Length: 374
Image (cartoon, rainbow, N blue to C red; front, side):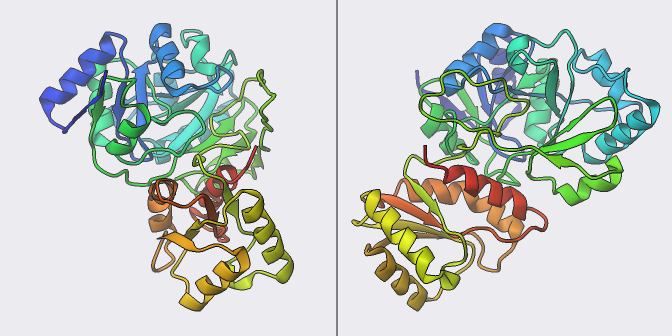
């Protein structure tokens, strides 16, 4: 089987919807990254998602839905749709949560809530919580409307690898495993949704930084948040406890080639840091050449100095933002990692994202997980 990449029109949307109703999977564009969609009510379809992605069962899925109404209670709608149970939440907590969802849905925010019994256990890795999102991408919204049921849709790539932001990325990852990919062009944000968990007492936690900055959420939830710690995973870990959210493992979003995340900008590296980098390149067998990811343009003399430090030639360079804009950098991040991965470079080196504003934490998070070597 080879996937068809279909342009967006009514006929192709109806074809994709028909496949989903038959229990098949479809690659779909979202405003964050491309997703691998399947019927969230159908355990066989959910199993196909895990199988196609080679995804372990301990890593739950995000369930996507769409509600057209511009008024009324979102929380009540989640109950009616058989998605979440929030009636045990205290009234002040419900009010704050309702306000949050009204402000950020549709959009790149995933909220983990107590699950409705109707949600299959496979979608939640057996946990009593479910990750929910209402996407803003018009193609995904239309597909949800046509199918008439919620869609589980993790990123459309093999587990742990770089997320896809174009239809051709999905094809390279899963093109021999699914029938159809809807081509919606490049994704708007190019980075996954932010994930938060809210409990009945109103405590909330940032599980994954993403395309909705944390600073935008604080005023709606009324108190500071906790931030979850990475789960460790190594080659011997065949059984991992269920994760409350996707994207929490120490290694994720990673290219197939080793990636070294610098502790500072190239021009600011200390002699000791340069020594560590040189040893790493040598130990990884990277002396034949490296690929480089930088936040902004770097002076030629700085690149020459980096080549001297590593003892290896620079074979490919990717710049995330010529002007240092975080939105542009986030949008280019995964495409840049794929380009470097496909280059002749044996190892990859990346500058860190040092900004703690806006999308900075999300970019830093993805680079940290992508560089974690097992």
